[in-house]
Length: 315
Image (cartoon, rainbow, N blue to C red; front, side):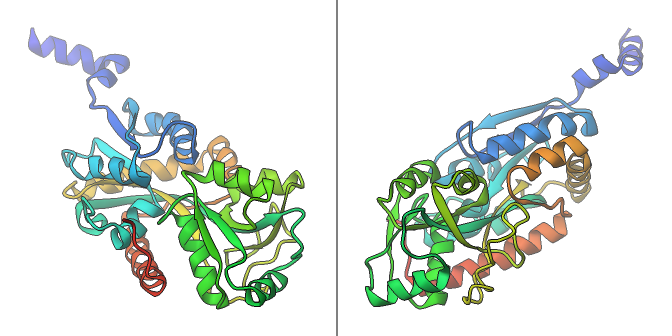
């Protein structure tokens, strides 16, 4: 009887699929944000590619650290992964006094999915029309220009700190609980500048509420072709982005990591998925586990230097 039941299951695709373990994707941020949007766009094509049910599990807190800790502590069977981002993976380890996991040791890279550069933006009424004028104002009155971020240690904070260091200026940090309230105050003119993800700032720039002075990428953004890179604007070395990638607990077999990465690349290759992700204002990646692991190591070392130079700490 057991043999007949097994044969029936194999002959019935729906029943066979039901026997497969579920792929749980931990999202370390609340619903409605960029990570949630990316995960929802990948859910259907991943389900089709892997032949598994996909469940999104939201574990927000501490800028993504709570969720990624849950990934690090999960059973390393390849059926639990997390959609991590820059802050919890390559910045938090250098600023948090008690980091609950080591991203490079306790997590296994699967694939980088999307990398979103930042725009340097100011309110539309702000007198500086370009990066040079902004820098001149900051040098003439050190500390008088306040910049908003999504919180201490966020990728937006570190991008602005990198800009500050490379420009050799003194500006005042005003951290917020997330990018949305920071953008609200920037539009209102309560702060004078922000380096924010293209995704969040683009609608306000296109609507005329904000002016984009530069972009933290090696090339111009196709959606704003008249906005120079910050290097073109005269400040070299300000390359920054918020990246999103899939990671598993350390110890997952290499074959399973490669299979997950291949499924992600297949999902990212679907025209509808690519078009929707392109609307997030980023570069679609789809890297191998090895390439993503290298990206994590290089980015971690780079942000460690910025944190040390800026003496940034999270109390």
